[in-house]
Image 1 (spheres, one colour):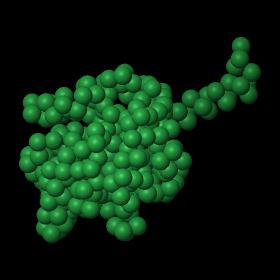
Image 2: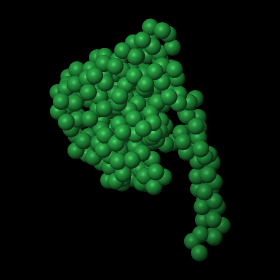
Image 3: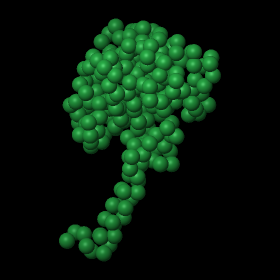
Image 4: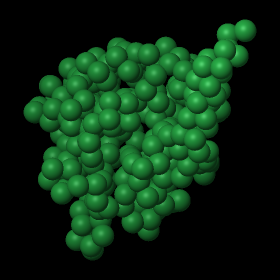
Length: 258
């Protein structure tokens, strides 16, 4: 899939499903491209997956710029999306533009920011200044202190209506994509039908235009921390652990190096 966002919109109109994955480094991003993934997200989940942090709140803009640079260097075809980390965009639209410009210069094709109605003016500001935006609603990890943890959202009629209204407002403000995390499948499906922009789901059912998962979850590298909606396609932790153990065994038995 081309980096041109218009091609993603065309895919939505044609009913084609697209696949996103997270990647934080050069070899992972290269593997994702070779596997045919349509998009790569450099998520602030890097703090949890790579640094072992309990949440995403400690990730800095400088770290996001660094990881965006090395992922963008690795790929030519997939759309490259990069997260605006906590504290880099909420203060004002001008602050959000300064942070977004750094990510775009680092190689991102589109930036992602969390939040509903309070972010409408920011999305409008960025969109008017050549910054493509993917809005993120539902379970927004940067808000876990307020949400009380990593909990599914939109479970009541009132909460679902609020998410629906947020989605419409963000799209009207100029968001080019919408990511919905951990919300009811029927709600995500209805929002996807209503919006002309592509929608991306994570734990939001099959009705979105694209799906995204964390690469470490897909590869089974963090089985004790994977969310319930993730699927491991290989027991990567066991495969890698066995390979490392075999290497150590051969060194100790003087088989390696020959």
